[in-house]
Image (cartoon, rainbow, N blue to C red; front, side):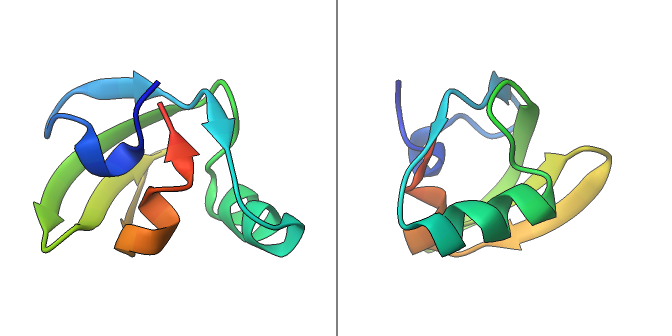
Length: 70
């Protein structure tokens, strides 16, 4: 398992675990980041990542992306 910040650009990954406090987990789930779901990194700029998740393009901060394990 690696954090989303280290995932290869353009490669589809499966979300294995979401860390952090309950409110952070709930926020990420509302955005579509759920365990078992697919996520693809589109671009990474300064640690911040732009991903495709559930047919949506979402920008995630470096801090949030490090809590998403793939």
